[in-house]
Length: 106
Image 1 (spheres, rainbow, N blue to C red):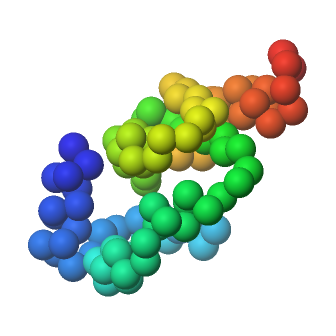
Image 2: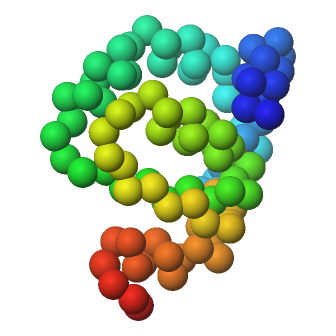
């Protein structure tokens, strides 16, 4: 699914994304991806010396869960990963986010 979305994005040269802050749909150009590919992200992330926690909704329609799974497969250090049944805003998963950030049961 992720590969198909990226292929479609490249073919159309943009993807429509919802800008919640402005309440509108905007076109994000494929040049965003092309620019990101200029950087060695793997090298940059390897230099991080701090623990990493990721909470991602498996119903996210902005950043597909497959993208995070791909990310996790690239880096071999321990990442505290939590997949929750929620969308991009983590509204339903708020309690899990709060638990992960504050620790323990809340």
